Image (cartoon, rainbow, N blue to C red; front, side, top):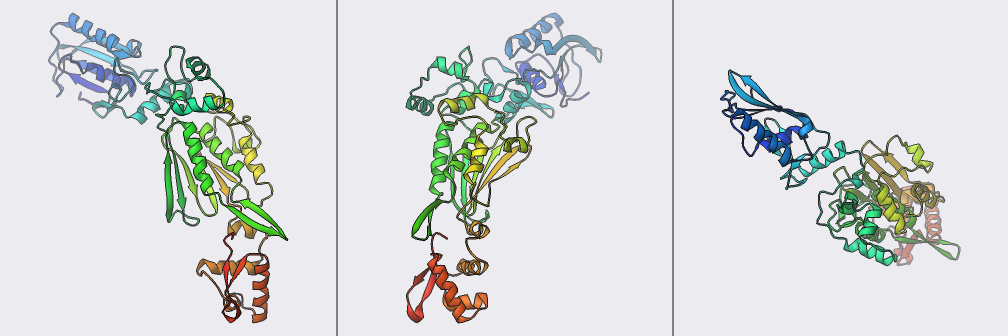
Length: 433
C-alpha cells in the first residue's frame, strides 16, 4: 500500500488526525492507518486501548456535524504489527469542519491527491448545495458578521419594521438567531455582484464604459437601474406638426428584466449577473437556467416557479414586484407596437434576455420608417460626418434631380439636416437617427 486519494498513513496519533478525517468525509471517503510510516512501513501501536480511546474522542469532540456514524475505528494487524484502521465514509451533511473554526477554509478540508488541503469558498458552497435539502437562501450563511443599513432603509421608507422578529418571519434568520443566506444577500457584505459593460457599436470589440455594483441586492438593483437609465436615451420623431418622444428601451422592460435577474438567479453558482449594452440592444445574462422541469414555453405563458421564494417575498413586501410570473409578460407587452421583440435564450446554467433598441437604425429599417434608398443614404454617414448631393447621386446611381428630391424628402422627414446653403449645401444625419 501507499498513500493516495483514499489512503493516509500516520506513524502515531497527532493533532492533524482530525484534518484527515474531515477531508475524507468531505470528499470520497478513505482509510487512515495509524502505526504505519509515511513510506508504508508498519511500526505498530504500543498502547492500543489508550490510542483507540484517543482516536474516538478526537473524532467525536473535534468535528462538526457529528461524523461518528460515518466512521469505523478498529484494530488491525499489518506486517505483523498492530495498527489502528479508521474507515471514513463520505458524509451526508457536508461540509464537515473543525469545531471552533466554523465553515471557513481554515476549518473545512478536502482530499487532493495524497494530501488534505483547505477547501476553497466555492468548494464549500458546492458541498452545502449538494448535501442540503434546503434551498440556498434557507441555508446558514458562512458569514454571521452582517449589517443591513441599505435594507433597513428600504423597509423604513415603506413604513415596515425590520426587527429580529421580522427577520425570522421573512427567513433572514433561523429560530436560533443564525443568519441565513437570504440575510447575506440583503446584507451590506453581500459578495454577489452585477457587472455592466458598454460597448461601441454592436460587438464587444471596443469598451466605452464598465461598472461593478456591490453590496445589498437592494442597493445593486437601484445602482444598476440608474446606470441603465443613463444609456436609455430619449429620441424625438415628428408626425406632422406633433413631436413624439420615444426612449431607446421601455423603462418597464428594463425594470422587469433587472428584477427578474436578481430574483431568479442561482446564487449557489459563482459568477456575477452580466449586463452588456450595445448600440442596438441590451443583454442581461443571469447565472442559473430554468427551475426544475420548467421550459421556455412555460415561461412565455406566464408560468413561474421562484428559485428564491423568500427573496421574492421580500421584494413583494417592498412593492418591487407586483405579482409572481408577470415579469416576462410585462416585458413583451412593453414592446407590443414594435416589430423587433425581446429574445430569451436559456442553457443549463444561464438565462439571457435581449432587449432591442427601438431607435437603432436596424430597428427603424425593419419597421419600414425609411425606404431602401433612404437607408443607403443613412449608411453613408457611417464613414462621413456630412454628405453632398453628389454623394447621394453616386451611392444610388440616380440623376441630379432625383438626388435632390430624395434629399429634400429626407429633410422634410427630419432624417437629414441642412448645413450651409447654395452650391456649398451639405447634409448631416439628425442625432435622433
